[in-house]
Image 1 (cartoon, rainbow, N blue to C red):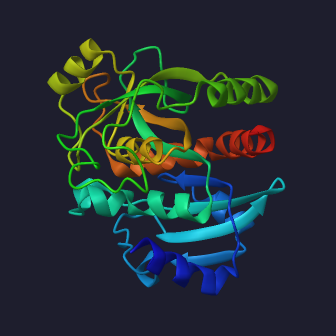
Image 2: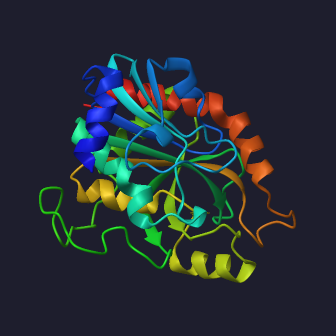
Length: 268
């Protein structure tokens, strides 16, 4: 399957070999629009599934950014769309086969930590998989990764230091925290958020963790950055909407893009 996907991609990209992969979350697709050299809809790539979410273009974008060959997922697929864990993480395995060594995972998330505010950016230091599933369940292909991968440092500490340095340079007050992933598509209840806070979570979302698990399994260096777009349920009296998520991501995207570009310059 991976070879099928790679062969099709190479007919468009003429053997373009990316070093860095980026998954662009809700409202953050402008980086791909600004730097696109090749764009292939997911629906055209063998064994990829199509994104059904508003704000996600659903295409694989190739570009040279800050002198680095990059492949970007302009929009991701989610477990709540009805896809399997294997389907939503399959692009990560394809990225690794294309040559990607480092992956940047971005998302929109709700603040659980009461010191966070909508518009903050948070470096993910660790995660809690509360999705009731794992993308590595099933037969293992030892050509890709080990049966029982270590998860003690999913989010690369050196990359976190690089993000922190970039944020200081840009005078962005970046937060650190633990991301908890639930299946969605319903937002969490106040009781669930209270439970998540007790477990040590700082922000909640419906993505990223399956991708981080598979990227770590494949031997990639992983960094995760959340755009805090709203207060999680029970933190404020406002009702949660996807429109609010997109609206806040739009306001923050300039700083987010600057941070990603500076990160790309400094990744070794």
